[in-house]
Amino acid sequence: MAKNMKNNLPAFPENISDKIGYEEGSIVSKIIFNSDKLQITLFAVAKGESFEKHIATKEAIVHIMEGEGEFYLENEWKTFKSGDYFYMPEGMVHALRAKTDFKFLLYLF
Image (cartoon, rainbow, N blue to C red):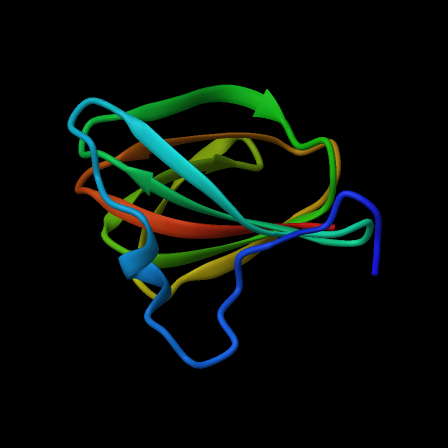
């Protein structure tokens, strides 16, 4: 097993959205898996919250679990909704803003 392994994944099927709640005026995150090759973080973003533009430090996949908002990708704002997913290469400038409460999984590899 890898050093510094943090694994909060269940041994049996569970609803991952139930593992984190919303906090008004906040962005909450919880690392659910961490190894030398992959980190998976669950985020809960309250309506109206945002991340300013920043650069992806690793390749990533984003999977929207619930809610709606916008991601700044490839120099424009793109709308997302529950069930959407996309790939971000290392070095991509991105940002987000929440139209509703929303949750997403971030896979860094």
